[in-house]
Length: 68
Image (tube, rainbow, N blue to C red):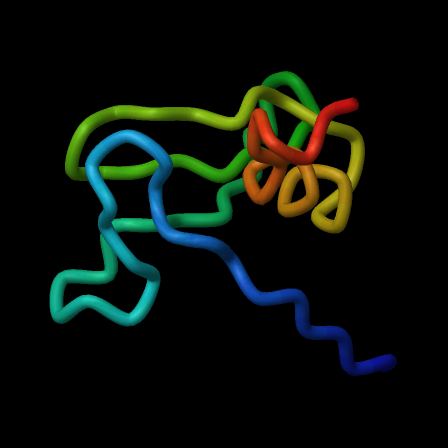
């Protein structure tokens, strides 16, 4: 199995980080809709549903200043 690691940025709304003690940033998979998403358990922010893990992480990591 191939190793992959893409770092998750902090929550753009509350600033929670993936390495905080309670690990508020979560990459999850919804079996009922066959989609991945990244969400913040502290404030409820969600990066939307995506077909793959990488796409979900990239969407979460996208910031307004990244869009031109």
